[in-house]
Amino acid sequence: MIQEKKLKENRDEQDSEVLDFNKPDFKFIPSGYHDWRQRGYYLICGSCDLEHAVFIGPNKVIVGKNEKGEPIIKNRKDVGLV
Image (cartoon, rainbow, N blue to C red; front, top):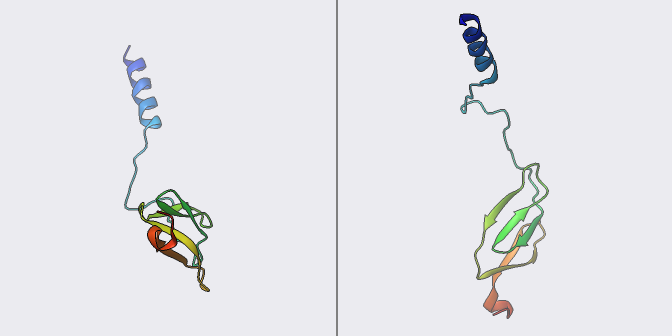
């Protein structure tokens, strides 16, 4: 009976893992270039290792990119979409 209890405790210790959030396994560093696409109210970058987004809201729309590849965002009213 005592041996079974010790075996169970050892199994529980092996299954558990202590996480240290001050030392993450993965560090996200965005690349210098972002390929922004609009999906709903968000601009989403699909060119980085980790997909990330920026909220632009319901009144804005991406109309193109400048020479640096940055998105050009305008009001929907200015573009005639309202």
